[in-house]
Length: 294
Ligand code: ADP
Image (tube, rainbow, N blue to C red; front, top):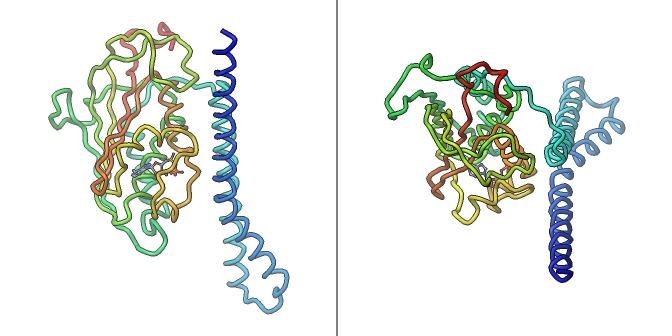
């Protein structure tokens, strides 16, 4: 027994060491860029302020502002992940009109910097499509969609992350197809401890869900990475991933958000052809929302 405990402790210590080294690698890589910009632009402004034109000064100040925005986004993501892992995030559940939510997320993605300048040099062109299907996979009207029982702000955050990745990892642009369809699946039974983000539970019940799929025509993901990308700080090592910023935390946060909704999140992908991310979320209960303990 002692030996097993000792082994567990050693495994845990190895896991923590690995986590620390992943954190250090990611942090040093991701912090260096914005810190170098801030240092470089402030030094130039201080040294040459008299000789710089007004527009140049403004350009430098804007670059400093962008770099600090990047740094605060990094800190926000790290804090958020710590809160999810500690189980201290409280969701506020209400009926969510997912069609509307996706429309807003697409509008934001279209305006984002990746839309016109995804990976630095090449301007990329994306076409977004939003479609609704019925249970049989046939085209349907948005009014036909049932409401999801969820935390609108958190679900939007998950959508934004997946759409942003679709843009970031599609260097040649292309179509981004979001499909919404009601279906029915076996889901983990509610009222267990879901804070660990795992979707493996002892008992399951058949539940009606809304399935959201987000398909891109990007670089795709090799099969041995399909599960790993949902773990913290995990990024697939490609030339493109090295070019685009990222902490490898976005999908980890999505996994936590979906797990707290008792839903499922997974991806299917063909390297070189593109990826599809799937989310399944329980619907608003037919009886009064107050009678269900999620
Ligand atoms: P980040 O985007 O900050 O790297 P994520 O957790 O959101 O972190 O994603 C983890 C990794 O999964 C990415 O670095 C990338 O390698 C891979 N990935 C995510 N979405 C896609 C996608 N749509 N196409 C190809 N690879 C993807």
